[in-house]
Length: 153
Image 1 (cartoon, rainbow, N blue to C red):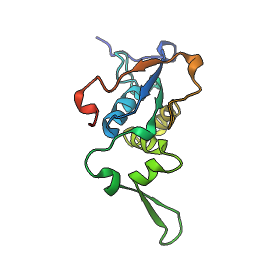
Image 2 (cartoon, one colour; image 1 turned 120 degrees about the vertical axis):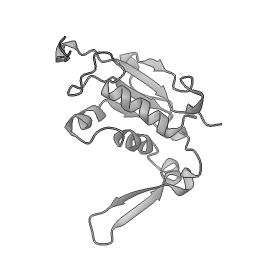
Image 3 (cartoon, rainbow, N blue to C red; image 1 turned 45 degrees about the vertical axis):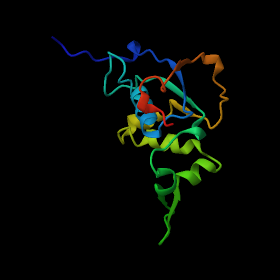
Image 4 (cartoon, rainbow, N blue to C red; image 1 turned 135 degrees about the horizontal axis):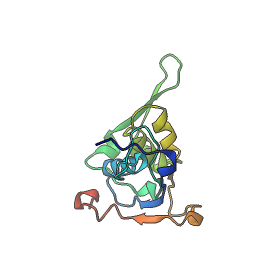
């Protein structure tokens, strides 16, 4: 029995849309990362970009469990001596670009290689409910109904 390896001709990419309103961030990010890599397909091949194109709407209404909104911090360094900076997740969600919380969570669930950077280009995250991808006729994936733990009351 030979191992199946998909070729570029075998790849069938779909467009899916996920509503992040009321969904727990980590659970949402793991589902998106699985869809971007293509691990939900029976023909998954690790070295090929077989994942779907994912559109996430209402990223500003994503939920965090516990006290993470106030206590968990996102750190970065400016490159200058003593240039470490930080913000809480609550500050980012209330700021100008709340979609970065979802983007970074998904990015950190993918492996750190060239293929995952290519797969991240298939992710589009929007803070509001509007998106410019109606022409692709994306199908809706309801993350809330997959598991009762995916939502936060």
